Length: 83
Length: 263
Image (tube, rainbow over all chains, first blue to last red; front, side, top):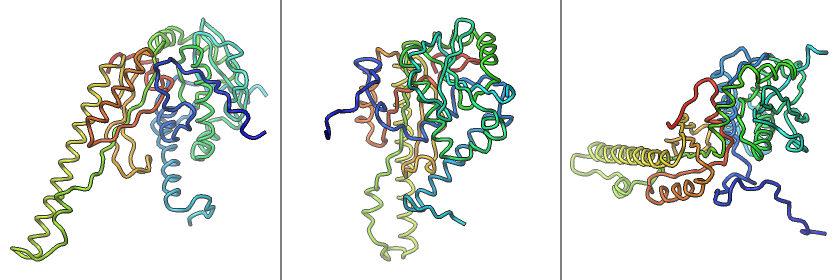
C-alpha cells in the first residue's frame, strides 16, 4: 500500500518552455501578500474598508512583521506570548 | 438576512465555466460560483457580512493566520480560473452586497475589464527580486587584529574603518549597478514591467538587503527565454543574488483605472 500512488499533477504547465518555479511549492507568504494586498484591481466595493488601501497594506504588513520577529525571537511551537 | 449577504470577489474573466470551480475552496472554506453579466464573469463566494463587514475585516486583517489562510484561498481561486482563461485578479477583500452588486459592477466596468483582459491574455507575471550579496571584504579582514601601528591604535582604527566603509560603499554601488542591469535587460523581454517597493529585511527574514523588487508581464511564448535570461544575469553578476518567482496571475498589471504599457 505504501508509496503506490504519486500525487496526481492536476495543474498543467502554462507552456512547455515555461519554467516551473512556484508550481507545487508553497509560495512565500510575504510574496503572496505583496501581490494580493499590494496590487490587483481595486474597484470600489460596496462593502469597503473605509481605511485607505495603503493603510490596509500597512496593517497586514505590521501583522507579518510582528510574526516574523516572533519567529526569530522564539523557537517554533513556542506558544508563550511575549509580555 | 439579505442585509448580511455579502459577495467576495476574486477575479474577473471573459467567462467562467462551472467545472473550472469544481472542488475549489474559497475564503472561509466557502464554495465558489460564477456571476455573469455584460459579457464578463466574476468568481464569487457568498460571505456573511457579520464576519466580512468593515469592522470585522479590519480586526481580522491584523490576525496573521486568518490573513494567510484567506490570502492563499484568494490566490488559489484566481489561479484556478487563470488555468483556463485570461483573468484579472481583484485585490483581497473586495466585497459587494450579493451577486446583484457584483453584476452591476461588471456592467459598469465592462470596457475597462475587457481592455485589461486583452492586455494580460497569453501573458504571465514573473517576479524578480535582487539582493545585495554580503561578501566578507578581503581588504577589511586582511587588516587583521588591531595593533598599535604608526600613529597609534587610534589612527590604525580609523584607517581600517575607512577601508571598511569604502568597501561597503563599493559593494553597495556594485549591487545597485547590477540590479539596474538586471532590470534593463529583463524589461526588454517583457510586455510591461513594474517596480515594486523592495521588501525590508524584517519582512524577508534575510540578512541580505533587497535592492530590486520587480514584476514583469511576459508573453507566454517567451517564458523560457525570460528564465534563461535570469540565469545568465545571475551568472554575470556575482555581487547580487537573483530570485525568480512565479508564474503569477497578472496581479501587478491588472489595473483597470490607469492602463499602462511597457514600463
